[in-house]
Length: 208
Image 1 (cartoon, rainbow, N blue to C red):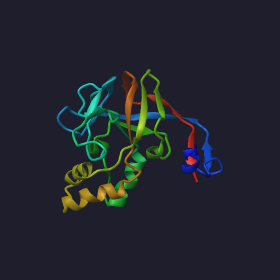
Image 2: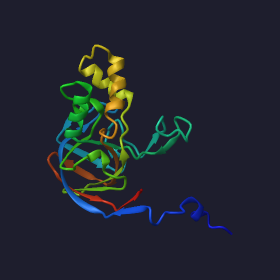
Image 3: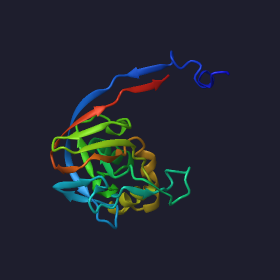
Image 4: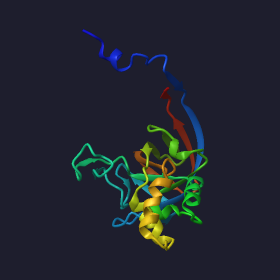
C-alpha cells in the first residue's frame, strides 16, 4: 500500500524549520470586564476566573454558539468556548488607530479583557502559548482574534465618525494581525491589575 503521507508531504523533512520554544516576561497592564448583556468592557481591579471564564462576563461560559468564524458548523451550534478572554496590546491598537486616522482606540471599545504589556507583536503569539500569572492563574492562547465589523461599529460610534458604516468596515481591514488574541482559562483564580506574567511559547514548525 502506498504511503499517503509521502503523497501529502513529499518534501516535508527538508522544507520545515523548527523554531524552539521560549519564555517571555509580561505584565497585565489593565483589566476589563463586560456586563452580561453587552460586549464592551469597563476597567476593573481584579478578574475572578473560573473554568467558565470571567464570572458574569459577556463572553463567559464553558460553551458558546458558533458564528461566522466557524463555517463548518450551522450557525448557532453549541461548541466549546475557547474565546473566553480577549487580550490586546496598547502598541498594536495605536498602529490600528493611526492607520484608521484616529487619535486612539480604547481597549474597552472592542471588548478587551486584558491589556498585555511586554510581549512584542502580541497578536502573533502562536496558539498553545501559556500565560502563567504570578497569582496562580494560567491562560491558554487559542489564536488570533480576527477583527470584525461589530468592533469596528463600536469604534465608529465612540469617535463619532462622519460615516459610521465606512469606519466600521475599515477596522477589519486595518486591524488584521493586530487585533490581539483570544484565550481560555486552563487554571482558575484571580488576576490583579499590574500582575506579572510568564509566557511560555511552544516550539513551532514553519513550512517554507
